[in-house]
Image 1 (cartoon, rainbow, N blue to C red):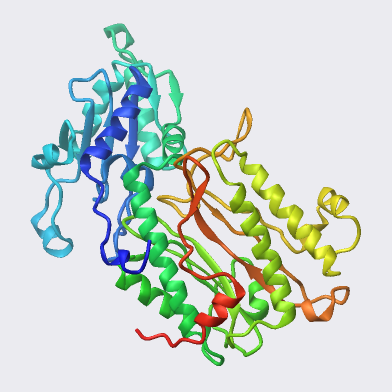
Image 2: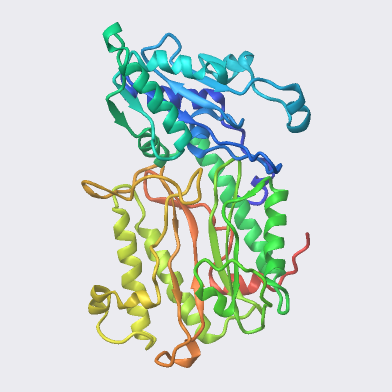
Length: 444
């Protein structure tokens, strides 16, 4: 996706798509009842509300305090419960959804929250299976337990009650692993727009700037492209700060001769991006920096070349570990035989995290990496990050020229039918490309 393509933002997900996702859940739960609570808003501060990701995935509804009830055996299988419309609240916070919006949003019914417990009691009284995740909200758990106990007291009247309990979110997380065409379009846009922001950060970086100034450039570029929320707190780490994996201060001064590690992404319509680039503050890699950087890049490119349907997620980490371990030994940073170093995990002194994670509505998206059958094989429609790194501590047994160098390179990758597509390639990662780009001047 080019910068020119970014001028045209992808369309919103149609409400029919959310309806089709609900229909999949309805089919999967049989004669059960599924219950999902939406997010709650802050009572004191006017932060922009972000809906619970699972709730948004099934509804597309951004209103707080909402509840979704799915019951295939009921006359109205898909019912949304909402707070009552309040003109005073709408004056302060904007329009609210109401019962008249049911048809537009493709729900069978939209009812006020005041109807919820009576409606749920009737639905639970006709099933023995409940799909709901206990342990997330004690107050909601108590409401469910209270209704079940009430129904148990009515068994002589012919009432049923849930006696089998299943995780709804586990079912949803299986679905969310495979992105549909609407999700992919949003992730592609978020990734491509974030890549342009990283390009801007490279062009803007100069010695004596503050880390937070580089963060400001990133966030300006995100916002002007419609990415209104950071996917996670940005990491802008100069020099030895890059050795801290989740560095968060972003307040140090950029010094000539050091590398700057920038790990940052932003959401577009709830869908995340996640990119890391490492580049020289003064625009020119030193030879030791280049050696470490190219080793990480070699590992990343080798892993990306492996990605295709059927490949186990664990194979990606194994490939990265092999290349990084061999390279560390060749540079004299790690000693001994590479196979023994891998087996004993001595490489973890320099590479202590996993290769990547799923990406979607959450930056560390949901879904198991390993099942009872073993490591999950990749499938078409999955999106993941690939982010090997090396973090060389400042210690006496390490060649001096490498001490304090931290490098991580991360891209967002979509698994397609034949292999994969890197969604963040617009952010350069080859040494020559980075150095050429940094000769240019950033203009807001």
